[in-house]
Length: 253
Image 1 (cartoon, one colour):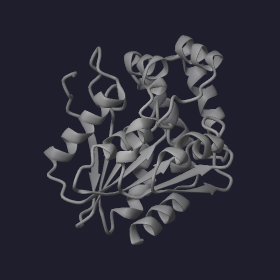
Image 2 (cartoon, one colour):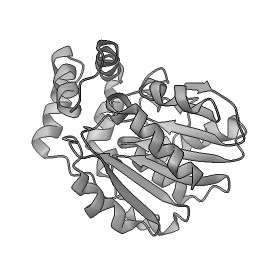
Image 3 (cartoon, helix red, strand yellow):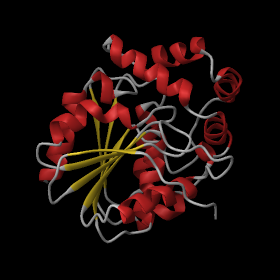
């Protein structure tokens, strides 16, 4: 097992229930700011930069799903969290499900936004090769932004999305495309005993909603799925209010 790293976190709000937010591949904790701004009124909100992303360290190795999960578990332990909901987006959806399969006693439920499925993620080989070859160029980052969003976002948000893409370390980028996204943890999903709620944009070009109904839902004993009308892959930027409503609805039960 690789050594865990101390992840960078953004924290706002207080309350008996903590919401832990994990970001998409090539993103950062900052994607959750518009969501957290509303939820921090009543909840403790902690957004995490996974290793090699955002402002977290980028070691030369240790980018398996288990390694990333171990890092998040250390954050939970370090912050002394007694009751929490795990919110994972895209790549980190796989991390969130893996953590849930370990059955932490303080976990209440898992909320997933267009998650990478427990089975290998169906990224076409052509796309994998293109992303591996062009990462780090602004042209490629802008092209990715245009592909993964379906609704207009502010210029500030567009710059943040492009910046996060460009500052993702090469080692983390390569590891997810060549290894992490291809991992199969489906056999662990029977151990996920908390409720799992999934939401995805119906215009998601990066991870089709069909992936959820075919590769995610069937593996989970206790999951629901709904579509977000009009959103692409980044509802955190495209439709934050709708995402806040989804989270509040699920927390309220």
